[in-house]
Image 1: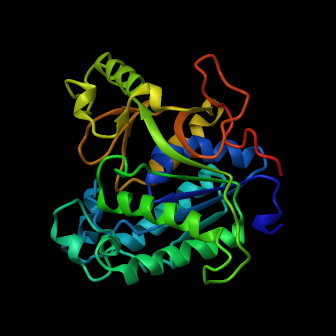
Image 2 (image 1 turned 45 degrees about the vertical axis):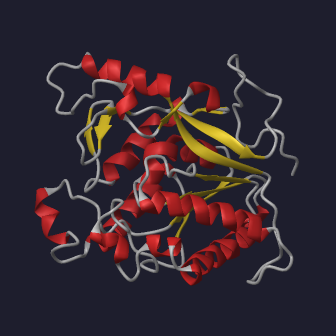
Length: 303
């Protein structure tokens, strides 16, 4: 079956391999299991990532600079765990490079995704690549980051901008590229409610001898959002095991300890099966939970 022939179609735009499993892994596994076609578009190979596996340290950007190739393998493994068979790199593997953290030398690399911030030709090329995917897959639902990229990473910010522009352009009959125009019904931003992260921090405090660091306040985390901004709650607790396995597949970037994981900053987070979003485009469904939140990304969409 071609992607556009599936009754329900979900497309996610993420910045690096591992981002998809952290914030949306359980959601992806749930909708795949329920018969939806799930497409992952990853914008870079994550070449600038810090490596947590000592035996692979030589792959780093300042050494052999081969981490991107290794992370393709990690992403393939993670997607197999989630059941996702349609995963693509924007423009093909290596077209756009990981830009590193904001203000670092990597921002200026000739292939850095962040170059799209200052070079309209690079931005237009990235948008065109996404438009062609959108018109081929014809998703009713698109997920990406907020305008701050969750925590201010250049590639996350650019993924947001390209996804936003791509959704708008895909619907325009006068926009170039292949495929018939397509209008996305609903666009979501990934969200981490403040209360959920506060609960995660409290649970970690109760773990004796945890290898992970603990912050004093949830306000020290840039990516949390006020609970009242969260419009959608996807209960995918049944898919917590595939999500955990997908996180483990990204071994160069993620450490796990029981039900907790951490990135290179070693700050522990709970691995949740329930994932949260902000509806930015489209109408919320009438099927809301007791907190007034949607419970289905496809709610209200007529095929």
